[in-house]
Length: 277
Image 1 (cartoon, rainbow, N blue to C red):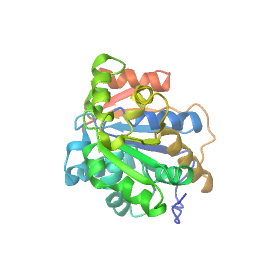
Image 2 (cartoon, rainbow, N blue to C red):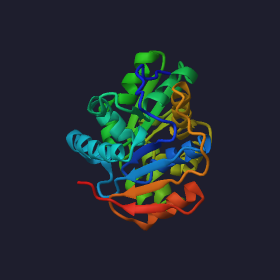
Image 3 (cartoon, helix red, strand yellow):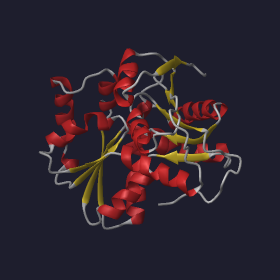
């Protein structure tokens, strides 16, 4: 796994971890980080006013991501984690240049690619994600670059994000949409499936059930959390102080976001509406 070679000397362990996504999806990653790094303070930004990112232009996604990153910088974070596959695919390199090595920047794609190429050589792998993520070809390019023995088949599943954000989970509507997408010939005979969107772990069990639990369904949450822990340990930036107070910002308030955040964090949360554009 590749870590940054630089070390921003002014960073301190007690600084928070900044996380952003277009909506509730990144909460799957934030929850995994909370369990793996329980003393870390999390500042989360859900851009609910602009979701979904997957049908936006690259320029728009980069613009949204840059504004949010700057907002998190103002909150004095030590790392910004792009908990959105679309933004990771489209905006990561622009953000890396924008930050100019001032803090650490982590995306949710590279750790998954490392995991896949370490565990599934020679297999047929499926990737599902937003239109922008699939169109970018990022997963396929990076996986084949590391292991040409892996066959990658990608499929855009754009209705999954609005379906999840509207709360259609574990019902006939979501099951019908899942069935319609996953029946596509592109995913025939796959042995593993990458959930190329951080929203998708919310419907992971439904996806596994569709494949009769015979396909290894890979989501990024725990993989990225382990990657982040390794990064912080490498640079002595793991926070040892206990009882962190997490903060959640949204660009547009939704009751669903608040209920999902409470479910993932199993505690009262401080949710604040913040429109930064």
